[in-house]
Image 1: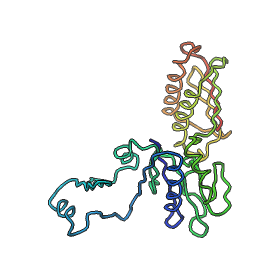
Image 2: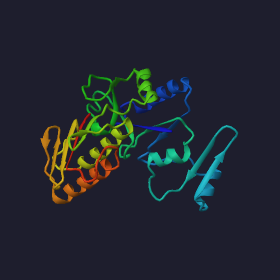
Image 3: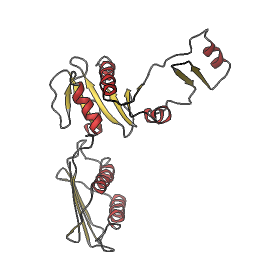
Image 4: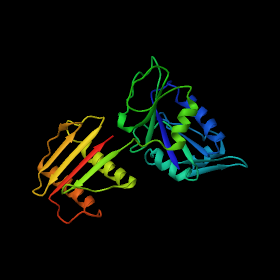
Length: 263
């Protein structure tokens, strides 16, 4: 199950876009689920209906079942994440498209812009899979016009959601080869470790990291050196040493580890 979250201000065209994408993806043979984040709440159990009486009686959940449709109304202590809802109710779907969910951590997001309403993304570019707009937009990620439904569906279908990552790892001046899985793992771990650091830009294009045996560390982000306190030096050193220590061709307690990542 692949969850894609569509974000953007009201009236930018998220619903219309999702409707067209559902039709396109269904034509391609995929099962598609749809979610909508309702910031102002909603009601399916209308007053006077049996479901309303059952909820008013204290039921924690009520299901409405017919020959062709099923609906579940459930009380929650707080608002669940779109990912949790998708995994609970749409786990057998190929693709789930969510309208809303700006705060979804780790979700693949497409932001929809509309001239006169929202002129630039509010989501950090690093969190975006693509942008859809009805005007010219220049970004370092895919940008689609609102009528490019087949192209957007191609992006979702083909999984071209991971940006190209190139990693060079040297341990004691020896090149250590990494397969695609390990490249992605090193990339994810390093990005997560450096992104919260003070002075690091939202758009990370390059990470250079050198670790010496005396625990000296040199970290550069986008060519700019980033200072680290004692705790962070130790944390990053242990993390990288632990990851490289399991690789074939790496000796115990190496004198120098160098990693270069470009996106």
